[in-house]
Length: 228
Figure (tube, helix red, strand yellow):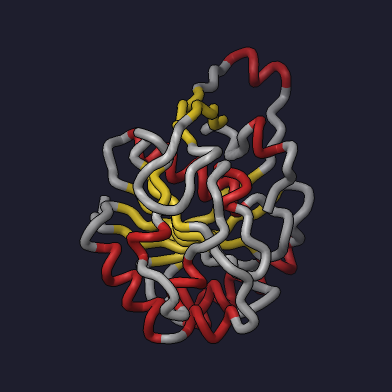
């Protein structure tokens, strides 16, 4: 219930679904009336631009090196209430960029403009980006993929979060397959989120509709691209 709320979404390793969870979480929070910003801070293997169908030629990395401003790289996803900042140009030193003062200044700036800021970043056990950013936000959400993430990796990730001084907000168990009997006794629901397949960074762009499968944490469209 805290507004503004800033959080990092991370996983232990690649392929556990952190980027699709980030997008679905943004969609759900925006539906409740919150102004949501989704920042792609995975400067090594970014996926947010691809999954949300926006142009990601310039983005966060370009802002961090001083080549453009934040306003120039924000892409609104139609009238969904979600704004996206793609990762942008390939950076030779992602860890240094994310730990430098400009990143902290960006997070301070967006807190005044949005109710919720979601930061998608690299896996915890691969590099220290998530732990660095975790100290600049209110907490970390850890994505764990059923039948893929090992107990050992979960334990290591949780210990790393604690050791870094970051706050663990919660854990998402992703990729759970419910039984046919259970599915017949429950119902899912979908959230329509307008996306901008031909949009360029900035405040304008044509929109189209995309359906997010909110209750599973995955979208049918995004599933074909594979989790990230």
